[in-house]
Image 1: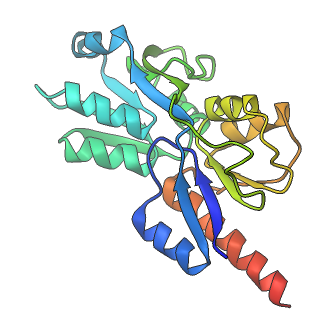
Image 2: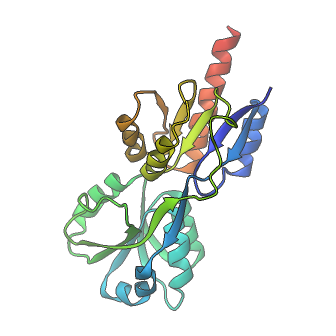
Image 3: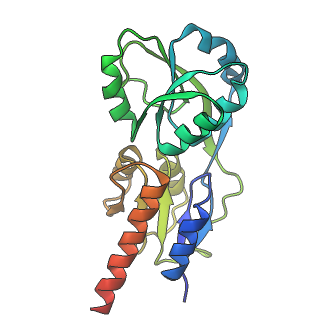
Length: 231
């Protein structure tokens, strides 16, 4: 019998990791909980960025949208995560520093007080953690995916559910699906902390907040669990 890993992030699990999970007798089922969409501020980015020395991009979605609109010249970025960094570099921009999470980047930027920095961020971004020389431009936000179809009738009880954002956690718990026999996994501490509002179940979380490290953490959990069952 094949078990399920319910991948609720907007982007699907990388194919090479799907193959590795298949070998462990787990199949990825992609069910995005959240749909990210740009708002009216998106069209102002090309003008706004000219008033700043450097820019912050903190997600793969943000990097994709920013790269698509900033095409007339190249800019300097601070990023969170290797995926966002790769997208910006491929578009010809300069990445000055890559952090694993927002708090680490905020700490790093404390020594950059002479720079005017613009964070091209989500409407849900934490505005309070950044140094005073960082301004925020929330140009996109999350909404519930209208096509989300998981429910208590079509979901395996003994499964792994992977989350990518606090908004996804909030949406999930409105579904009131029995998850008492499920295992949770998430990429970062901010999302993991949101679970405390709903449950005290343990969570699989990588030390470094990237998709690759997230998949590796899940894979190691499965390998350990399999080893425990065979002893």
